[in-house]
Image 1 (cartoon, rainbow, N blue to C red):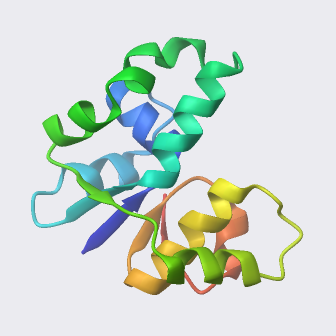
Image 2: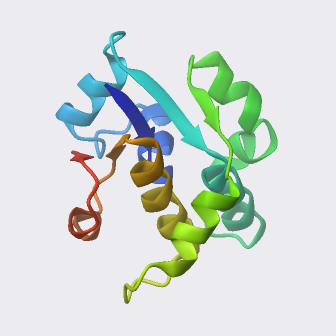
Length: 128
């Protein structure tokens, strides 16, 4: 299975945080699955760290690529198609990071690892 981690799922995985559900933890740890992290998550972490909303994420904000690679996770770039799909979504949810993650999961046929139940209404498989 191809997985795309939501930003909070990545942070909780790295921290060993029990907020990450057992189902999500098992799916990420399963070597049969390929796990990807979006460029949108890199931007979200850097932005939220800069404005003081993710103060505990200093290392991740500064060494995102190395940390993701060390976990064996693939980087998922944002394409023009991803951006177009995200921008065209008719949803009340305005978070641009979530929109991009939904669009990427749809376009790349990936399961989204997230606790965001809102994602269930957007033709993506959500693992939690």
